[in-house]
Image (cartoon, rainbow over the protein chains, first blue to last red):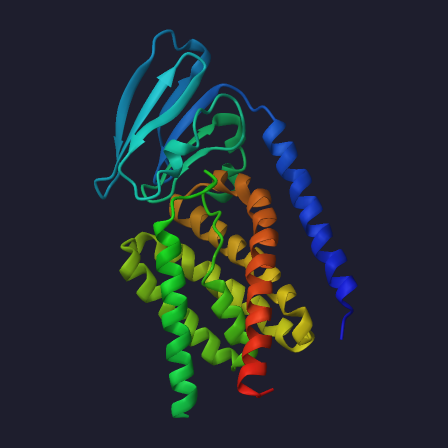
Length: 123
Length: 166
């Protein structure tokens, strides 16, 4: 049997690496050009720095779900949605960070464009 | 046989209650995929108190019925890929761990559950962007897995004392 101490060290190492990566991700900046992606297709591209006046629009998913996207100078958020968990609304404003706004039930992603570079390899 | 079946049915019902109750609580952190995973207590318990196949049956029935009752069939794919990966990683750990190390299986189970969830999200959303959340999900897996694992470990110990079985 493997000693409990060994397991603790292994798990602590995983937590430490994941924690360091999370910190790095939260402090990273990837640019102000954002993409609105639905079902894997980019439906809208916005340079947040070029937005002069706030506007909103509704994104409707293939099964009828709705997300209201609010765009302001320098930032974007999901203002309201009819998904069950509302995680996309709670997530708040996206400015230039790599962590995207995700609405899993409606398959909607709002992400910083340069953070999507990894996608080229998967598609 | 009847006794085992009854026990499995009871555990499935218990897991289903935990799953449904947890689904009613609004998400604490606005990060997609982060949750306590209370039903995992039952999966880990069954993994050690019963056979792995019985644990798998309990897991699959709970996921299916849970998605029906919680009313979101779209979430079933995330639960399935997460649950299956969790079960797969606990399978070898079952033999490797003592009863006092049961929580270790739960931590690894939770970590791999979140990996499976992320893979499902990448496939469903057809974008790799969601993988950005993986480090945070791994960290949350360690924390929630530790909690549910300790719950399962205590439950196993108390129930053994209560019924006098080993």
